[in-house]
Length: 156
Image (cartoon, rainbow, N blue to C red):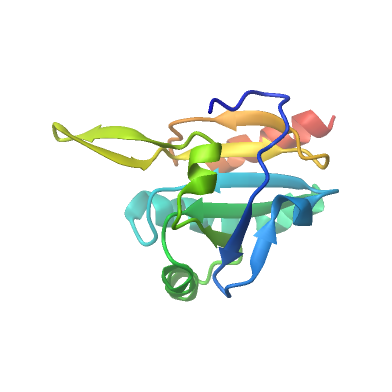
């Protein structure tokens, strides 16, 4: 499925690190920075999570929540959170349903080998559950600032 701007965001219900279910409907009335990353405790993913955590209060002042998603388990997320003192929500999609629904589970090439994996992506979802901006193949450096800037711009 190819997700487009101004489309209703696909519904999801995923477990966070504490194994509590979090659904798209739980974020109704708030903006949601919904980002997908390949793996807990890898360099780029760690930097991204730390930077989102560092800016979390600013996002909250703008009426937004931040949630990261990977195919790691809830236990892996909890270790990642504890190790880096993360404050953002990390959701587990071991079944890869939400990853597929958002179009981020794709064939990737690395060192001449092909395998399925998560393409680092971020979706900015408005308080009504509509996708307002999409970043694909995200480069971590400067990304959090870009997302915050776009959020402020879209809120007008």
